[in-house]
Image (cartoon, rainbow, N blue to C red; front, side, top):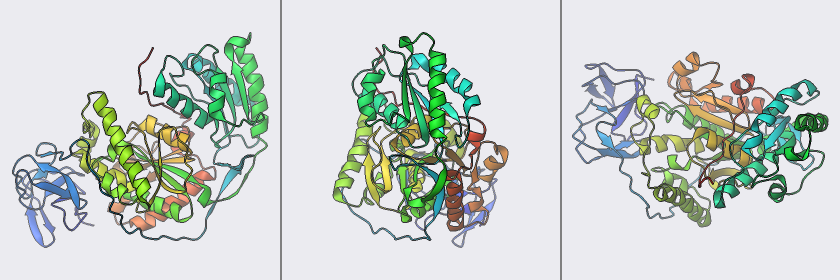
Length: 493
């Protein structure tokens, strides 16, 4: 591949794979284009003269409007392009043909739980009902590591600042997320740790949890015991023994659920890492598996692509509601809907929200949309699902885990060390990041512009994810990182 990439035959810009200096020449479709200025790697240059007010086409779609005349060979970025998006829009269902994929049936080594669900880790989790007991939960997890035996991977605490002083939907969402994590099959056993006086206390939380296996889940109210550490460690010893009774066994890949997320995107994300994850998504869906795409604000500008892949008009309507609900969330807080991309995105070559979204949604591949989930809801439909959550990395990744994802695939052009409640595979969009931050990055998609085909890499990523599902630790797990964050949406009392 040359030093640039023209993604779609109708594009008015190309992406510089390597930096150009002013005066350098690129031959695009038989036309020699002289760079009028320096073009950083990952950034765009004009393939012809673009008039002020004209739509700028990338990926075959408009990524914004020219703020001024842009001569051929010019750098196209935030100084001369602006978003063309408006507020609430009218949508029409125009279904498209969905390609069919197939593959040899695959398996991974997972843990079959007593209720029939499958986990890819056998951890013991401590879930605080309220932030007041966070330090106790963390201390218990640290003290319990010496008790680990058999197939148990680790004892993990998930501190968070909520569970009290909340109202309405904000409090409801917190309860649903906590209950979802308590029920997550990656946890072989769970200690639910309460204070006693919080709004979301254990008795309030139990109906959200549903059927409770007394061998798998224990409860402790710190205010009700003299020494909460001794009481907690006694319970954790029992829970570790219970979790240790599970062993890995062959599980069909069709039972795997994988969340799809990006963060710190750059100009390469939409041409390497995100389409690579899209290949993975199609391969897993072909096995009967489930993928979950989230970060709704980063669908704005590309939402019609997803809407027209909905398998029926009812799901189309739910997707319209998903998009408009998030736009109204911004408007209700008097915030600009399209205050995106971030400074890091812009530095990496992304100019507008349309530019970002058209790259972001490529993680969904080409499969039909089979389900639409509200925040805190658990996935029930196999295939590609859309989940309501913001773009914030920790909040969105936690929402993916709570929805049932066993693993999260996280693409990035800038790099990040964060983790989530489930194994979080970091996929770099460029080789420079992979080489510089090898302790963070698990898989390098940057080689897609260095001669490797996305189809071959897609199969390689699929095989790697099955290894992770079978117990291979990702870099964040090796580092001992475990994060969770709940979407705060209301007032604090």
